[in-house]
Image (cartoon, rainbow, N blue to C red; front, top):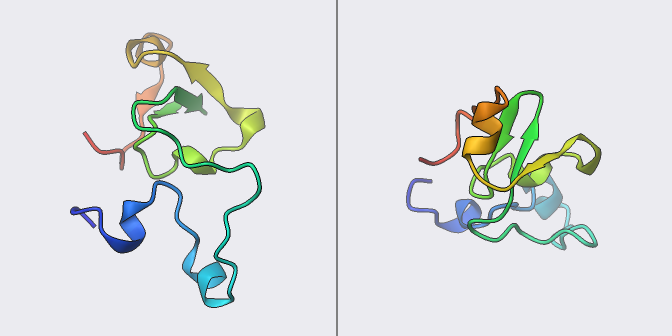
Length: 84
């Protein structure tokens, strides 16, 4: 996992249960976030594009931020399992 190989190399991997059932294509319109992409907040937690939960956030629940200091100033905390 720490070396970002295999399943962990993709920012939004296909879940294993879908992969086993032959559903290897991503959902239409879903593209993996670019490194250094926008920061999004949800329920007072902010997620950077390198965080595992970034691509799983619902579009309707996203609060976009341009820099990491903006969500911190608004009282958000960084996702706990997000790489440093």
